[in-house]
Length: 457
Ligand code: NDP
Image (spheres, rainbow, N blue to C red):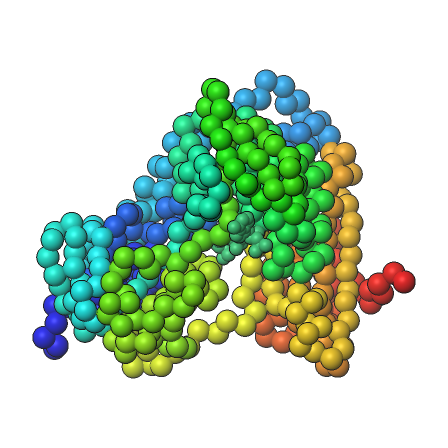
């Protein structure tokens, strides 16, 4: 046994930190974990999980409209924002309790405190004003949303952190950004009946995705009544009468709104942790630089999850945490595999995507075949909704391997989780073709696309 208080001390009890700490403790390590906010981290407390509850709530908004085509009367429907937030908070409290119990049951000690490094083995616990020592330290502090402080009045806006606790549902909202959070929250608020305007600095929202996805989501946002302004940013925000705000845009336009919502990305939470003082190298974005075993430039300090700014998704942080624990506490050197990670944007309709976008495949492979289809799903024939489904396969023409699959449509996220198994294990287009369709479903189109797409001349 080492002379340190702990074999492992983890700073940050989010998805990555909790998984690493639990596993390490189960492998016999003496583990301490410090969390300054709530155990569970962004995903459970103010990210993926509460967001999904808001998505479900919002989908009912469109669902009631659609139900009329199926014979339902939907008069006198009302919505209670505070009830939703109260129920959501109860569930988050329950999950928070489970996370705490799981850590304790594994034998880890939890400290409700901000923790900072004093040196490569010493951690200062602020709430208790004392130091503890550890042989290995894991930084798992995640990331945090930011607002652009070069914009006068930027602090009149909120971020996703505050969106989960709004006292009332605003009538009008302006969202800045064109990434995951901007699109998801624009759809959430629209489904709940708000007027929503999205302001994006570029041309194609969700620009990291296949371009067909960007275009499809953009047109579905507009179909839902969301105003999308591209190639513009906020120049200035001013407080106005009755708690309203006026936004001055770079294109000369002015918007008046009840709520300004910044969704312009997240930054690694490394500020003031004492990392640089301990010799830990950070990159330009402030993320901890790590090797393939999540080891930082100081050999007993490791980092997993969003704080390393690799692939910022919960299941990735969990895998990185597990790989770290296997490597350091179970004598099984393990690296995270970053290929073919499925992704979803919980827009309405949602996006599911795995593997190469067409533009990425064309950069890396010589010959690419594209299969795609765009159709109005059967359910909408009776609802009158014009919402469409997009499906696209990117195939390596030289060996027939399916390199990527991209879907915009109902249950796209559920579909892509299953398709990801096929794509990751190297299925060919012929394997897709040989799979019998399941009728009538939306997903059957994935195995019935026969014609290669030829771009119109
Ligand atoms: P994203 O990186 O997805 O999007 C940030 C957006 O803000 C981009 O459109 C970006 O434009 C724009 N932007 C950046 N800087 C500025 C600026 N100064 N002024 C105006 N616009 C700006 O970040 P999010 O905050 O949406 O999400 C953070 C991360 O959280 C995601 O990358 C994802 O990993 C994770 N996440 C995952 C979800 C899921 O899995 N469903 C849901 C929510 C979050 P540009 O495109 O031009 O760079």
